[in-house]
Length: 630
Image (cartoon, rainbow, N blue to C red; front, top):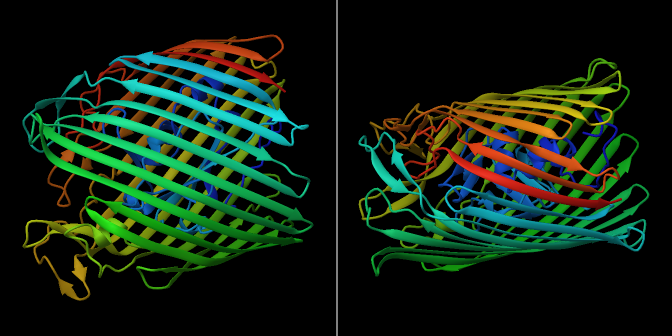
């Protein structure tokens, strides 16, 4: 963003590679009111990226998927740590607070291979950055369904800004008190359910210590707990369930720079605790839990000379998981990687390649990587073209291998080939003390995935995972972002558009050369829960502190069976936000009051998951106070 807007303060954030997409330090480009209205990473990615986010009810578990694949094919990183569940391989991104100075980005597949991977469609990164100023932020949010929340964040610089401290805490809750009609096409009849209630709180301390000009140490810790009271299921309307998730993340990042050399070492610890209980009255029908511990070590050595950059990396990951349905299991993964980048500045050409060899205690050694080319043909026109090819692998999860009694220790790795092409344009025009910023990008992709792991019914009473299908995912993405600022910031206009077209079809049902289901109705059909069309529109306008924002989303039908026999209805969602923001004359204090209406049209067909309730029209009020001393 610094290339197109020279008035922003830059923060040093470790970006995995140059081929990143949708990467932003959000409050440097989003208007402050939009930024403050988002409480978690789910909210940001849902509105301001091409990602498809599935929410298991209001305030429920939320997963992310990219490029027409499944959530387990998207790797999520938090300050250098792969935080996907050790057991099932997916991540609840609603557990990560957004108002904590995060840089959030989406990377394409093997560009994320500086870390232990297993991504297919891409990876999401979350990196904390530290400001060179001291201050605090406080917010209160309240609304329909007994929902209310508070969040506090503070930062302090010491020792002439060599030491930066930060603390973020927050609490959020909602009651299980609204009813909704289930318009899923299976079963056809309309039924009524209540939503999920929840309580969520988090604490996140951290510091950055620039020991000297060559050395720095960044420490980040996060503890969050979410207690959810889940709705009754369609099949068992008298049941109720509770789910509790506790997460702990600890990341230490050491950087050392000298001349053309830079060394990065990350050592971290990830802990997840999950508990689920379903009851009929006082009788426990289902109970499950797991504890997962993950130790991560990642080392990267970078050398830059003239137009060439070389990175050599090694990482090691040790997983230990136990649970009611899994005996104590230990899984080790590791990799060696090398990256070469050649930037021909005179030709405005950038070449890059990555090779990664990955080993695991539960899978065979394999090689992945990519090659990418980007060029700006005309010197004075910021129009760039890029093409890249990728080879990716993904190991089976602990659940796939060891879940009792149906785990399959004979599972093979999933593998995929991917081809991407893109065109991007970005420019800033200054006219009469007004800045016009425009960013546009179009991308097309194709992914050929082999040996995808799915769970199928057996001749026994349980389902079992097998390497069954080959999948072809293809599509394109188009994004445009526009912003107008005048010199005094009395007037701001912001608009963004994200369109995603994804066709992702099952191509076969083979294991080796054997056809398992000769009359399989899933061949050539769209994968479940992958919308073909998705459109996101964001519009914001502010004049002398008065602001309003309209966010619109369209999601096409999503099939909920592999045969595409049943589906969730397509829907439009419209959210409205309006309010007033006051800034003191010295620019140190600000306070804003806003009122929002979500699902403005009262859409009853709004469902992310079949039979999981989502609310109709509901309301929200927010108060935000900020203080910053530069």
